Image (cartoon, rainbow, N blue to C red; front, side, top):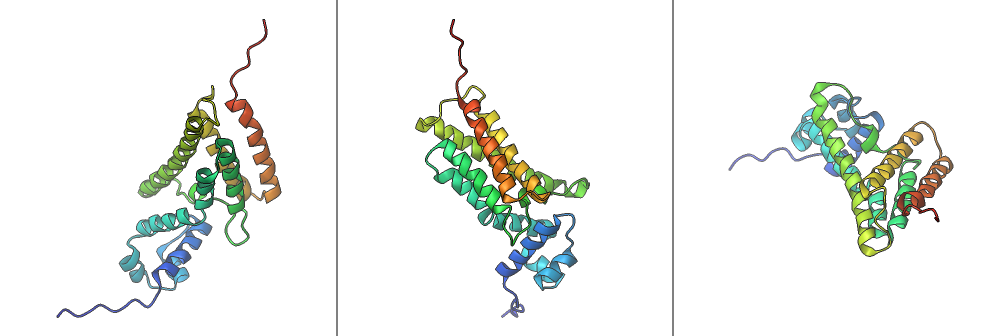
Amino acid sequence: MAARGRPRTFDPDTALRQALDLFWERGYEGTSINDLAQAMGIAPASIYACFGSKEDLFRKVMALYGTTSGEPPRRALRDQPTARGAIHAMLHATADEITRPDTPHYCMLILAAPTGTVENHAVREFLAHLRRDMLSTIRDRLARGVTDGDLTAPPAGLDAIARYYTTVVQGLSVQARDGADRAELEAVITCAMAAWDTLTSPPSHPVS
C-alpha cells in the first residue's frame, strides 16, 4: 500500500478567505506568494499544493467574491419585479457593499486588476470577462422588463442603457475608493435614476 500524504493542518476555506482579503486590499500585482503565505498562515508549497499557482488562487478567490460581496447586486437584479426597481436596487446594493466598514471601499472586480505587465494579460482578460458578464446580466434584466411589459423597448436601445448603468456601478466603486461616503453615493444613484425616464421614454413629438 502506498504511504499516505501528510494531512493538511489548515482549513482551505479559511485560507481562501484570507487570500481574498489580501488580494482585495493590495490587488493582484501588489500581492506576492510570500505575502499570501504570511496572510494565510501556510507555507508557499502548501499554497501551490492546495490552490495551484498565484493565478489559480486568484481565480478561486474571485469565485468566492462573486458568491459573497458580488452577489447582492445580482440578486437585486433577479428579485425585483420591475426593470426600474431592479436597476435601482442593484445600485443601492452596490453602494452598500462598497461602503461596508469591514472591507475595502471598492469593488474587487473593478479595481483589483493588474496593469501593464505582459505576463498578467490572462488575469486582465479574466477580470474583463467577469465585468462583461455583469454588463450582459444588466442587459438581460432590461430585456426581461420588455418581455414582462413593465418596460417599453427604449429608443436608446437596451445595450446603451445597460452600458450606462454598468458605468455608473463602476464609477460608484471609484468614488468610494477615493473617499465618497454612503450619502454621497446615494446622491449619484438619485441622479442615475433621474435619467431612467429620459432613457426609457419614447421621444415626444411636437404638436403640429
